[in-house]
Length: 179
Image 1 (cartoon, helix red, strand yellow):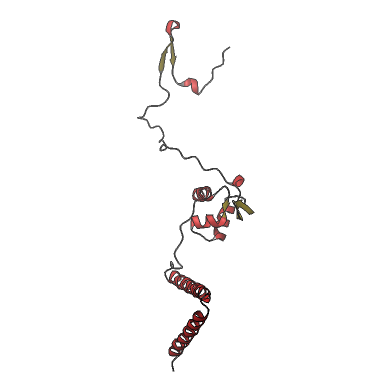
Image 2: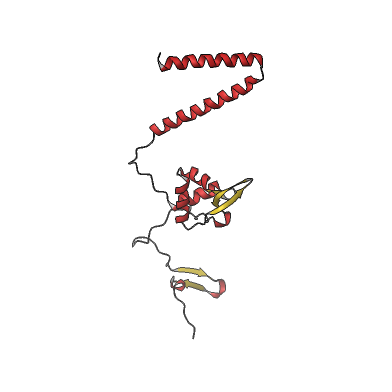
């Protein structure tokens, strides 16, 4: 007899015994359903884990480098008010050890225990979070070229009865001493 046939017969016998027990004691059905549900969830977890491993990226694939700005932004995203390393690792899609190394390489202190609500874990305290860099809403301006106007144009301001004030632009760069 093959091993497969032996397993089928064993499963049929076990199902018959369980049916007899449930018929005699109906409350046992809840326990049996719980056990079977747990075993089914574990089998499903193993199956999906194997599928993830088989579809994983090749070993020679180089991950994209993570910039300091991305790390600081991710820290501020996951902080509530402190940032757990596990949450940061999930936000950056890296292992926890890598997330800790990235944070420590930026000179940010990692504490053994920070608290968010009722949860406590390893992370960055809100006092240790670096500020978000201020990004200019405008594009950076290019340097002044020969054909472009400069800020050193001659301007004339009317002072009313006192006359006119003529500025040639040099007042902002030099200070004249009055003797």
